Image (cartoon, rainbow over all chains, first blue to last red; front, side):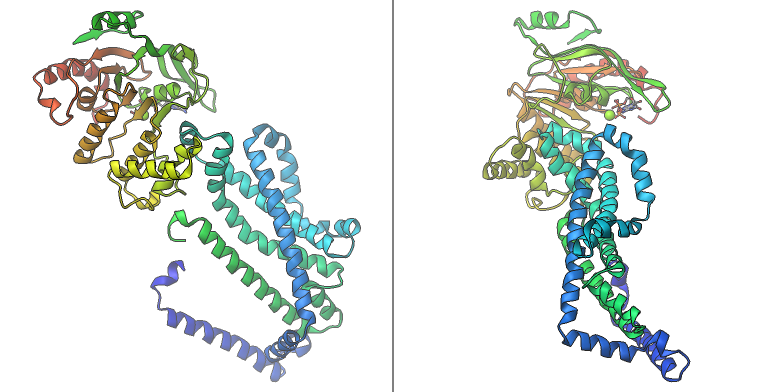
Length: 258
Length: 282
Ligand SMILES: Nc1ncnc2c1ncn2[C@@H]1O[C@H](COP(=O)(O)OP(=O)(O)OP(=O)(O)O)[C@@H](O)[C@H]1O
Ligand SMILES: [Mg+2]
């Protein structure tokens, strides 16, 4: 936990709790006193009640399942394609040179804007959301892998070749581990982006999913529902991030303190 | 003790002297290496290098910093070809990395993501040796370089000198026939250094392996080598090749007390001094 090591952790936690209590307390209080309009701002107690009600029902789990499924599927496909193409382009300068302008243009384009196209192509089911997640993740992972592989120390490659490494061994024992740090830093960002892709896709048109839940709440002017949906999303991202962080620590243990 | 200027008929002379017909093993024929930077300026690293190395010899290269010693080793290794001229091993021109060669780089090139053990056994695994055998041989070498107990450490947990020793184990473990060493001991303290030098003498002595050894330290060069090659300052040329007439087996710490040692040192130093003169700090 980096810098917090030397700090007084109980104090840090105390302050965190205090801040949360103050924030939610002020919110609740302001709504009760009529300073904030509950139509626009709902209230912490109502949101809490709503979340509990959802969690004790069954539909929410199906929505979470759908959204997570779209996110992970999009993430996995995006990472795979991004990594492979990143590797290939980094190791084939000619290819990279030819397609460089195309990448710049494609990367500058807001990927979410492709949503309507994907809905036409893939329908309103999960495929269009997966596709959204894929394009966002793909570019991020592609650029990071490309960069990571390009930054590999030539001296390390030379040493591996002297030691008898085949092309494949160089890839597996030098390029891949060396790019892994870069890839991981992009993975943590991209899981968040994959979720954005999936949720924005669900906002547009869907039958299930947390994004769909939020969008329908919004259609009914149900602010509490919107807030509750957002909080569920936040929790999902958090859980996923913790998992990725654990995996990263395992795979890059050689760096020392993770 | 013989002194020879760079010349065409070196192998014959030497073979005659020893009364045996030794074939040249590594031949460097009129080699030069140029580097072109991004602006298109050409920089000459080394030029007119003509050197013949016999199988089983221990050749040291000394010369001022930046004169092209590492550049020459890189060309012998096959990692990068000469701009002009040719490098041959057993009469065949080197086009790529050879699998019977070891190269201890001047830079730190251990795999940072592998443990000491993983690093040392990697060349064996690359060669298809089976895992348990590779493991056994790697452990043996880790012990030889004095790193028992550090098998599961990562390079970043070791000192510079320890990393150098891991590199040595990584090279010697697969028993290469030609060993290129680029200032391998300069990061070590005197005692470890003497131990490693003696270890090197033992590995090399009578094994028929050929060593090309780059160093800044003339004393070390003389103590270890059959031949010392003196480079001029950049762009590097070969100024002279000396055959070191001291008996083997040598104990590196004691060979310096041989009566002939200072004599040899004086002779080579007189050549080298002119080249390093501009580099007061050398
Ligand atoms: N890849 C390269 N590109 C451009 N110039 C290079 C390259 N490699 C080496 N040089 C130049 O060639 C010259 C010789 O370099 P080299 O590393 O062979 O010197 P060296 O004799 O090994 O020096 P040192 O004793 O300091 O290690 C130097 O001036 C260096 O700047
Ligand atoms: Mg050098």
